[in-house]
Amino acid sequence: MDRLTPGQIVLSLAGHDSGKLYVVLRREGACFLLADGRNRKLQNPKKKNGKHLERRSDSPLAEAIGGGVVTDKMIRNTLAACRGEMTGGGNSIGKR
Image 1 (spheres, rainbow, N blue to C red):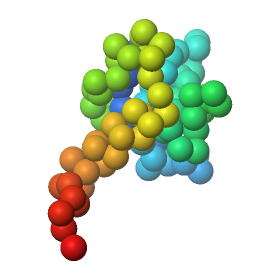
Image 2 (cartoon, rainbow, N blue to C red; image 1 turned 90 degrees about the vertical axis):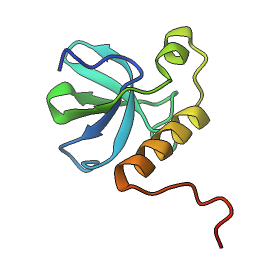
Image 3 (spheres, rainbow, N blue to C red; image 1 turned 180 degrees about the vertical axis):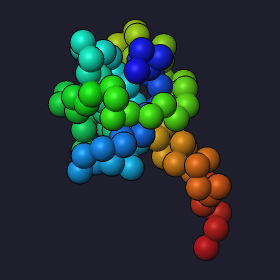
Image 4 (cartoon, rainbow, N blue to C red; image 1 turned 90 degrees about the horizontal axis):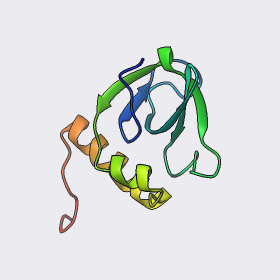
């Protein structure tokens, strides 16, 4: 999984969290530190083996992560937008 870089959105393929989306924060050996901004925040990232991850897309967070200015809210919003693109859903603003 050498192609994963900080800021990319990945899908967990194995474990109790399979099917969940995360943002890659950094690499530690063969593992990656991941956050979703809700259950796994920046202060307590998830450590996951790279072979259990599938790259989904790049995110605009790469520069923020590199600069250390990313927040949990930014991660939540980015993942929510990615989920909407994957399911074909749109913005629910104005819908009743």
